[in-house]
Every structure is written in C-alpha cells, then in structure tokens.
Image 1 (cartoon, rainbow, N blue to C red):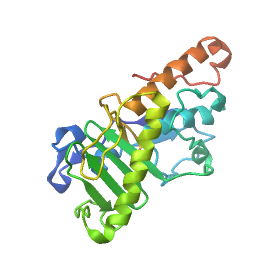
Image 2: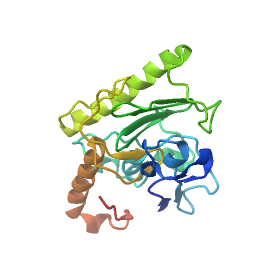
Image 3: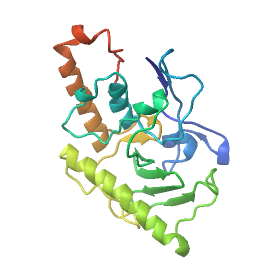
Length: 239
C-alpha cells in the first residue's frame, strides 16, 4: 500500500493571496490552504482512477489505514481518537454512518467545513467568516453577520465548539476550548488540522490525542512486529 499526501495547502494568487494559512494575518482558513492531495495505490486491490467526495482529515488517516490492513483492532482506545475509518472507499464501497464534515485548527483560527458551508472563528476578536460553498466556492462573499443566515451560523458554531470540547475531554486538558460569537473565548492551545490532512502547527488538543495514539500503536506493535510485518506497510510518522 502506497499513500501520497502533503502537509498543507497553498494559495497561488487566488483572491490575491499567496502561501499557506500562517503566512497571513489574520491566520487563513481558505479552501486551498486546507485542501491537499490524498492518493492511495495498491494494484489488484484498489481500483485505479477512482475518486471520492468524502471530506476527510488527517485524524482519519490512522484508523483508515489500520482498517484497510485488517488491523482495526489495533486502534488505541485511549485517548479516544476523533478519527473515522474511510477504508471501505478504497475498494469501491462506502463507510457506514459518515458525518461529511471536517474540523480545522491552526494557531488562532478554528473552522468547520461541511458539504455546503464553511465557518471560521478567530481569537480574540475575529474576523469571523461564513461561506456558502455551493454558491460561492471561491469564498468571495463573507456572509457572517447577515441576519437571514444567523441560524446557520449558530448551528455551525455549536458543532465546532462541540468537536473541540470532546477533544478536550479525550485529552484531559484544561482550558475553555471555545470561541464565542464575538471572539471572547478560546481553548488554551491549538493544533493544525486541515481537511484532507494536517499541516504544521502548535500542538493542540486533537494533535496531542493523535500523538498519543501513535505512541501507543508503536508500543502495541513492538511485541509482535515480526508476525505482522508481511501484512503491515510501516509508514514513518513524524510527530
């Protein structure tokens, strides 16, 4: 099994912007900063030329590779990962219940991206962003503050807050872990998680949970790697 990915996206002049998220002030969360390639190849098992519209994040990578290799039971139980197993897609199927949304965190910005919407919140005082990604895929028209969109903003903000609150509980971390509508509150640290993969960043709650998963997974493998080495393509993961 060969997997090809990258660590972050890149703006190449779109919307007058160049670079990745932390090249900007305020920190950026535009689509091309978040999207990266994610390609899997295994001739004879993974059909060539197929694509999927599932929204996946780097926290989904480990459970999906383990699931594909038949090692799903090796996924660490604690701290509990936010990751989901999308491995069925690689062989032409579909995962079971799937919430088609991803969560992004980089320095002072957090965002949620769903099928149709993106909401970004920044500490301490914004700016906030809300985009209808079906009507405005280039993110030219920020709808934040429009009264007829307030219900949508509130729903996305709650989902974003709930996701990171769960990450705090998994990690046992202290801190508020929330950004209010006017930007008054945020968690005590942030990491950097993009749709389709993770970039570089500050090691937040979700980042610590994933790092702990990798350490525990390495320890579990150490006792019987010889038995599994023909089944497992060991990928070097840098923390």
